[in-house]
Image (cartoon, rainbow, N blue to C red; front, side):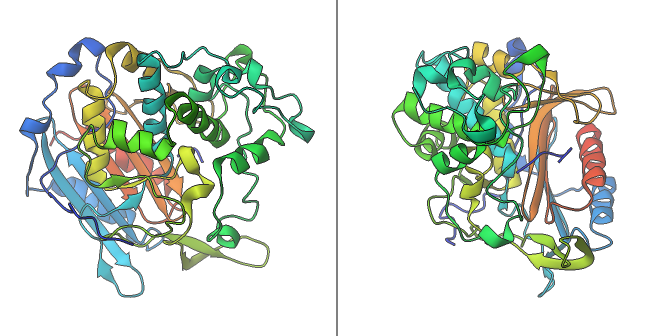
Length: 401
């Protein structure tokens, strides 16, 4: 469930004209001025250059399918597809289909925590110990880890020093695809891993899924309710997201319609075999938990971010905190990390805010510019074409139409 630098049918399905937007790069004072739901409607006219670029991504078949939702500066939505949704049947990619949004889940987890801060139920500078006394104590190689020395803010911006590894999947997803994991099990495995640095040490940064798993437990404790319920009630329902959900225990499928997700097959040495793909659409996402478990359509991810930027989800102070970004070594040039969101300097000189993620079988990228152009892009192989996907994502955000 890393970032770019590494089944039931929905009852309220489709509303093809629902727009979207992602995180805002706009200043807090200008958020309310961005056109939102009242301007949202579908537009059938496609940008030919964007369609051609999307088709180029899938041309050699290593990325079987691609789907994208674009919210123009005028508030209108255009949905794009390319490639195939199923390499066996050669079916089309469903327009605005459901995908695993992977680490874009971190935006939802961060919003839940920031809402709790806005309600006075926690402070971002609280030690984790205050909310989970005695829980965060390292063992073995992780003996130096101590919740008394880690703050909620450090978890949010990845300066806690918790491991970047996912120790419960040393051989990847295939051997554990049907295994259910409790959040505490994920945390305990991470606490046995050596920390990458001391919390907050000289602004050292290292992406950590374990940190967001821990944030999910903090949010549950502060709210007094399960994290999935908190996210559903306080974010999904409040923003009117009809095609976004947090899979429940045992839910290994993706709601229909959806493209299928793929991995490269591997040889006896564990090396990928180019051109040979394995279907990994169905697996238990609990291995990612609060760091990457959620599922949504591209247009609904954008819709979430519209609600975030227009103040329906966070108070101005908390939204400003969310966008306080720091240097993130290993990310593309011009990218910095805030509290569950990434500040992106685009090739056209514009700043956008968003996130992205790689769940097995799916790559997703999402962001919004200060003037309201939003793009959510998904492709159906998380192991191929990452640089090309990022380059096209930048072009889509910078496009004039």
